[in-house]
Length: 212
Image 1 (tube, rainbow, N blue to C red):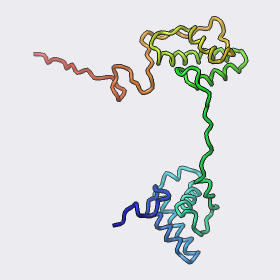
Image 2: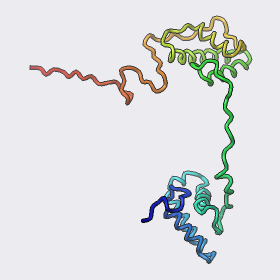
Image 3: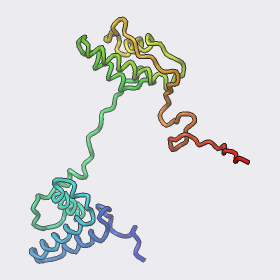
Image 4: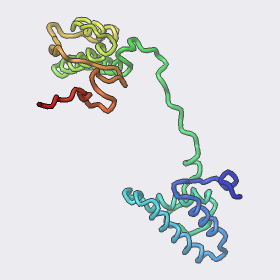
């Protein structure tokens, strides 16, 4: 029996094994003109198998690039586009630099620390005050996710100044808007009580009694 594990590896599985086999057959055609004719027919088939490719402005070039990938960059045909560099597709991406500095307050996260640093670097003006107020509301929300007790504005503003290492000064008299009494904030992945997994409220199981 012929098992997939014994066959050649599919370079682009979305096109299937038949397209790869057709390209392999085109490679073996000795006549160059006939080979060019057949590979253009294969390109048309690839376009039919992947119609979403037409959403891209350069979809024709992408089809030819995919053909070269399936052919393992080993096919001699006259293409309207240059053969792509194999290293561009198989070279490892550059390493992403990760922050090694530990977070000062895990309940707020690193993004809030970065926002505080950006705001602290601005000159004092009305826009900066608005940013501090908006960030304060968001920090209060994050605080209440992990700490269910109420939190005073002074606590949020104090944390803000600590995270900025004293570079961010909250204007005197600045206050956050009052939270409604039924406001609730939940941790990521945790649903509010009284809701089902689908996000809708639970239906009451009590049926109305029929009138006699």
